[in-house]
Image 1: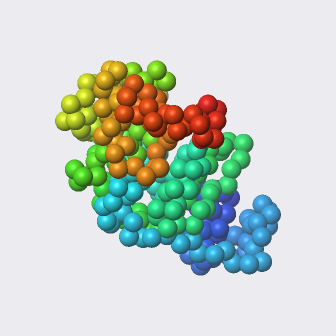
Image 2: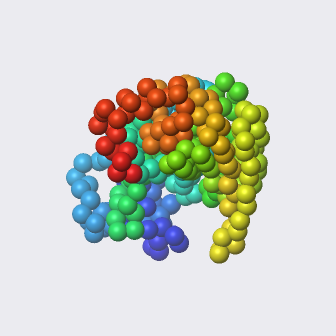
Image 3: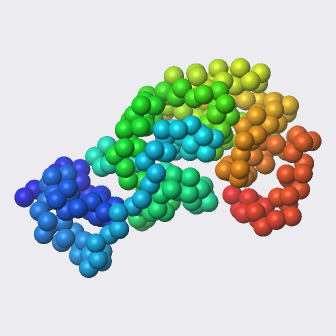
Length: 275
């Protein structure tokens, strides 16, 4: 029985660890029950006990909250929709962010296996229902060049943008420039309109990579504009942000001096200096 094209041992192991029954795995991978078990034996996976089915709140993306908007912003920029399996994933160097996502989604903290070619931690969320909900936002596999800007209610827009910046944003250490990178023209143009509606000095630039893919960068510039942006997007935060980005963005704001002094006097600052 030949294995289906494109199915790797790693994919089979992830399906098994996600709690997928052998009967469901067989048509997806193209292997028999015994052959699937042989893959587990080959990689030393313990199959004496059946894996526990991972839990998750499958209604998470159905109801708008500031936490949901932040996670959605992160997913639009740093998330991945699996084309063949019923799962999505988040990649983040900062595991604190992944643990927050799992907490908000009421999901088991399950990371994809790492190796010589995969060093960044990846959080796996297994749910057909969540994939369907993301499709309603226009988020599909291979989304990077086509993802639209979701129809986010005005109330939750700052939290969504904070997630976008945490995902694909860059903030200059000196605190004068910030940009968000996207391969999707429509997403970049809509984000530009949001920044302009907030009264920020913003612009968009475009370039093409060596492989022919477009890259759009949406910029916010100016010593006064970055603190103003920070004041907007961090208003509804409850610790759900990447610390050094907030620190860089807020450093020229008098209102944020207490926040910076707090970081300087806590262990969190030691972590920032290592980034």
